[in-house]
Amino acid sequence: MRTDARGEQAAHKRSLILTNYKLIVSEPQGQTELYNLHADPRELLNLAADQPERVRAMRSRLGAQALAAEGSAPAPAKPYEPSLEEVKQLETLGYIEDRD
View 1: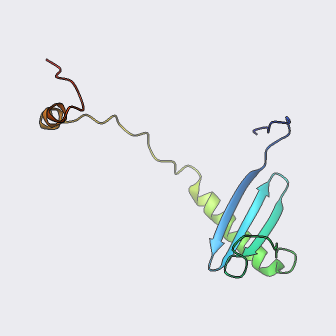
View 2: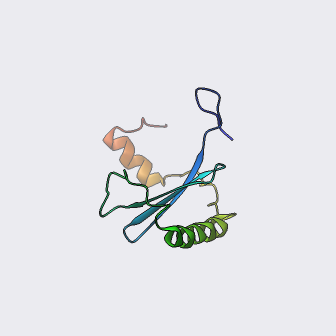
């Protein structure tokens, strides 16, 4: 876990936007925030306590997405090797110097 400038543990946040609502869950504290982005685009009024069913449904969906994403990191990219024609074009344009 990362620490902030004061040496305290930094929160890991996950979020989900569904229709007009945005859910933010801070880990490991479990703090939950819910905002209606249409009515409150600056995210000033936390609706989590007033809408527990929506929070529960969105947390469930967020958890399912996190499980689906585990182990699905893309493979490392292979270095790009330009063709001889591309190298000549880049040399002509002055982007690279003649390799000869």
